[in-house]
Length: 399
Ligand code: 13P
Ligand code: SF4
Image 1 (cartoon, helix red, strand yellow):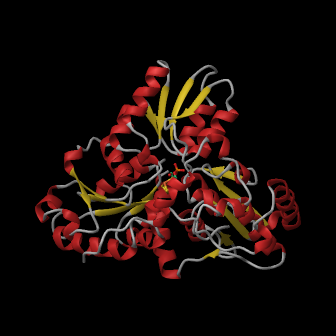
Image 2 (cartoon, rainbow, N blue to C red):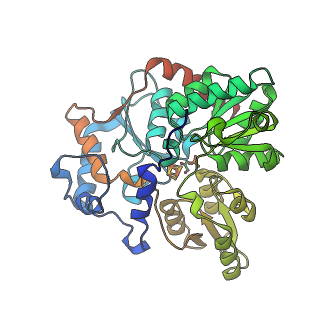
């Protein structure tokens, strides 16, 4: 099936938040919404609360709720939100925490939808997972809608079914239905911290891998395993057979879904060159969602947790140019005043969907719980939950 190409609204929104660093701290929700964004509606009392009022009321609500609530926070959350997290991590660590942390009745997930959905799949049956702003999605995950992936999978079975087959591997940044497809078909989930181990595992039982939805993480991972980019094809969901011939699909070792992250594809080789000219001793550290050229020109690459640890543990006086989301880069710079830490991209652009978790939304869902009302609960249909858990558990068993 062919359908017209569209750009996810969340990707268009990224540019609305590119701004000078001194304007990054949170304003009231009403002021932030004034740039014409499509965020979730919220009762009007929360719109004009100042940062101080929000802080005071979030503390009060948390005290009232005690250990019945745990707050998980991804490294890309703004400072004004991450400070309330009981546990901070990359996607992998947060999914492990969601599986291990069985005490709290409510898990408030300060991150994006696919992360909260994963927590809902892995947590205990009595726990409820809440995403403070239900519109906090991920533009990359939006690039792989279920019907397109189902169509692609059927086409691939038809072309490759009797020819060594293909294992589906999905990056955590995808909807639960895709994780379930992987679980049902001998595949697994991966994150940026274990993609190499998961793809290597997939090749033990299959001649090829379908990697969803980030073509860059897929390509960078294949290269780490010694696979040539010439042995990879891109699947464009807007074209028949993804824009490939049957023979090209049979010859490929990896089929890469045509998705990308609008934040990480901003980093490029000329920014790396400029950083090296300015600081000859600089270490360039980027996230593997960056393009192949950027990852190859950098000194190191890794998940947000790898980036955080490398810089926190580095020697004083070292210089780091970082290719990842600005909230994390700024936090690392702030926490490491004895080192020089800066963003590779001179224009600072937060991930617009991570940014949708404004502290006013956090207060709103906490106030709801204190009054016995569960706002923005994330749920997953039972069959999808079971199948996607198979794919997630395969990943967790590998690392
Ligand atoms: P990490 O798993 O490295 O935290 O990455 C998640 C993500 O969305 C990066 O854009
Ligand atoms: Fe998605 Fe990119 Fe934002 Fe990560 S940084 S949540 S991949 S849009």
